[in-house]
Length: 351
Image (cartoon, rainbow, N blue to C red):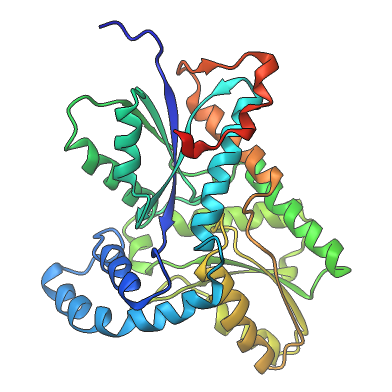
């Protein structure tokens, strides 16, 4: 059979979220997340008793309580924003004349990478660009997405062509979108805070010693953002958040850093989390709640959180540029010029 209409699609991948802010849902989600060998590299014989005997008995209820503080009528913020980004990306590409389906997928939880890949394959898609929503590469995130895709590949006979985006930590469009979000924040707030805190999700230091480039890419993103904002070395600080377990993680840690700043007389901080492209538990609850409280209790007066890029037009423009660069050379169905503007109105979920 001759393929009359080769179809190209994008799988837009994010970390994942529980299906509900409840203890049972968190137990299922955490069991999947913390069973990933890319996330926890402890030997199974040692890790399994800890995970199933301690963590999954105590942590789900605490995590569910935190999720309830950020849950919206639409659902989990991370899933809501990822779905919107997929819809908008499809529309942006449509405006360039490319009819490219864009499906959101979660590494953990639903909609799963496995299910979305199969849905595309069932509909005859022959070329899939896997685009993780992680600007900085880490084996704990991007490589885990690739593992999930390869697991599906191992169970599939008629395979589509696959491409992977490993990261875009220094992409000019991404840096410009970050800088624009900070400038808009400063304009709304009437100026800069004393210090800009640039907080990334942490990973164990051991991962970096073994070759993970994540820490260096976080530093590069921070330096490029500071340069775009014309900040001097004393006007910003790179930190790492979300430490888990007793091991040494990348430092300096975010919360102790802002506490030390407050005690030293820093009155105000702006905090941005460039590694998160969608607001989620780690930004809305950990940063904008827990770290905020720690800063004010230590004597700080003004803690100003800068929202993630979410559905910002400049971010979707950058995402479109990244997608088009990585789709280069692949045939895609063309939308007639007069119809291109209507592509934005069609939901990616229809695919």
